[in-house]
Image (cartoon, rainbow over the protein chains, first blue to last red):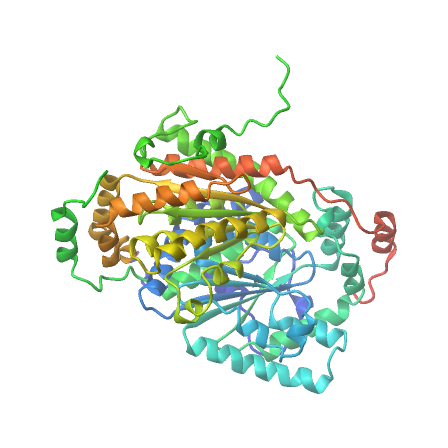
Length: 291
Length: 291
């Protein structure tokens, strides 16, 4: 068979949310779309991605250093314990940390609240050649803000439009947006919260407020469904990542990142100087003082 | 033999610069103090450090999240091609990128030049629980600034004192400083610059200005010697890392980081809430809407 020249981003395709209304109950949090193997094979597959991911990332970085304008912004959203940190630790850690800009968005500070909700986000968008990763994001402003009625409903409605305009601008400026909703089941969350209470090495991750939010599970699912529908645009589509299996979640995200970078196809920049001349300067020199 | 309870930070001890005048020509850039093995064994040893380093880093991070005040600041200085980027890519990449704060200091911008030289540095010091890494640093302000006579000599003299006071304050606030001078030979630099000119995947790293600085090799070595002497303090000692062998350099830095973290001995934080109560809330609950 002739080798197809078309990119086949199978994980990305398998996880992309179709336009239109979203019903999260039809998404299996325990599924593993696009991957047939076992946990053991999944972990090996993740590890095996390292070299290619690292190479692609370095090309993108080199392009950015050399005047290119493209960059990637990965947005991680999901209920508590869904694995935002795990993805950073296991999938994003496969690339050079110099090329990563990670920002965890916490509850806004009083200073941040004096600005519109996108102000603090704007300041953290990645520079050229970088892979930005948002651990939570501006979507909190239409998720917890909606569930907790932190702002009037009319303002929430305006925010979806504002987010779309903001993301369109980022896309126009050369940002490829990868928006990932980490989808876990309520039962899996319960087990993970229990584990945080039971294991001394995880206790520090537990926050009693997590249970308060958990008690609004249904409202959060609904808020996610609305957000996914209203901000699922051509320039910034949503993907739902089944996340009950941690190994699948990490592998899927690494695959999506690999496919994203491969589709961007960054190439090693050429010189903006005379290579032969520089070579001559270097080899012809007598180092002025070798000591 | 009874197991010694004393920490034995052999790499750190082997690389620490004694107080007093420094003569870099007495430091072998090709050496491998504290490590007996081959390149192959060195690479395996680096890889094997991953789990312990990662565990120690997570403990420090957890401590920071839970109210602790300690953090680490690694300062990387060295001539062009000495491997600041390589250390980030190969050694620092062993820990969770969420716990790293990497800052590469370039030539100061006009806005930065309107402030004193430590202003932009102050803004990048790591937060509690973090490992900060400076790729170049405030030491450029007594290195290139001295060699290129960017400011009067008297101001350079003042800067050593200012740096010591600044670093003392950081140390008093809970920062463990790890200052690393990556020591390469002029010949090795020449080979690495040639490699950048000859390999398409490295061309983007080449900057013609690197050769201009190389022509001042002796002046830079002298500037390093003075800086190392004048800022080699108890609270912020200097280490010289022989860096002609890339694998040794990466392994040595990873070992120094491991030894530093081990000496800090961060421990998993205990709960600041009633675990039994939270457990009951979690297991006794009827999720309000499972959908």
